[in-house]
Amino acid sequence: MFNSGITVKEHDEARQGEALLLENQSGKNNGRKLYIESYGCQMNFSDSEIVASIMLDMGFETTGTYQEADVIFINTCSIRENAEQRVRNRLKDFAVAKVRKPDMVVGVLGCMAERLKAKFLEEEKLVDIVVGPDAYRDLPNLIGRVDEGNKAVNVLLSREETYADINPVRLTSNGISAFVSIMRGCDNMCSFCVVPFTRGRERSRDAHSIVKEVTDLYNSGYKEVTLLGQNVDSYKWQSEDGSEKVNFAQLLERVALVSPEIRIRFSTSHPKDITDEVLFTMGKYENICKYIHLPVQSGNSRVLELMNRTYDREWYMERVEAIRRIIPECAISTDIIAGFCSETEEEHKDTLSMMDFVQYDFAYMFMYSERPGTPAAKKLADDIPAEVKNRRLTEIINKQLGLSKLKLEAQIGKVQKVLVEGFSKKSDQDYCGRNDQNAMVIFPVRENIKPGDYVNVLVERCTSATLIGTLVK
Image (cartoon, rainbow, N blue to C red):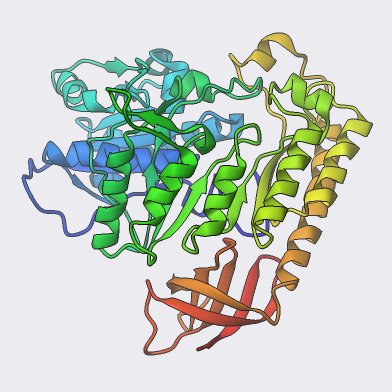
């Protein structure tokens, strides 16, 4: 995986394989310990918090050391082959621990579990439980079956499950930022993507439960929430009697009105669905961050049609122009696939020219990786040689590195409002936090400043990925 600019977007490399740990645990305790680590997108990390909530209700406590766990869960990603291989390698570590502790239960959760289903039990002999993203409520039953000496699988997908009534525990949290899932699944059927097959059909969560969760987070001291969905712009909820209907723009407004002190982000947007109503709502409320992740995938209309993205080059450019017109200060990031099936050199150049047109603040950039079971794998030949994919990806990365640097350099001399997250990775003499546009900002520690505070920072210089400055009033 390659990323340029700031590194907290859909797949935060710093969090891959993170052991999720809940501190100050209280309540019933059955003496058993849970170790859970997650891979992939923010939705997986959010799901792990739902799983942990269910397990804590069963009396488990979390541990940050898998060797001492009674149950190990690995929440998996299937979006690319290397993501799955990473999980396979990690299971080898757990196998060593299980030899020393034979009663240890090992479970595979999430998208990889959904894709491979019971086959996983055959391929990975140490795995006891395989659970898809819609079956986490069944974990008490599944663990009971394993305790009786059986293997257990539940990969049933649901048209209704949103986990709206489960209050996620906040694992390994800084107490400042939290994810809030607003919908599950995806109906888009992009030809390269496994998500509709691993997470099921799209369904939106009750708007009132979302507002309540954000309100509870604010009352607990949180200062930032990220609303999550595979395609947040297609959020549509209505009450059972049909008297109340809420779209994404209206949900954004309801959440923003919880308090002007809580900052709102969201991910991910689909170019076919992001409306002017959403953009005007973002412009109306200061606490809705001026940042949109808008995956383009390709800058060429023929390739976009092969990808089944349901928009063309002109549509995407019009949406970018609308963002620039309605929210001039808005940062835009993206996803780009290099070397999709039958992509020509001219079509690759269309992607490069799209990058020049949009001037992305940062991007996730990948070589096309055929995923089993997707429409592309069934109908299209993965016919671009690896060396050509590599060269095209390198050209995309180099261009984005330059664009990201230009975007950051444009902030020098400007004052940024920053939410303090904690010490920087390199020094406990510096704090770090993000500005409205999701750029990381580094500045010296001061005694009267603490994580969770909003501060104003005058940007004095930048690296290729970070703004550096000093505090001002």
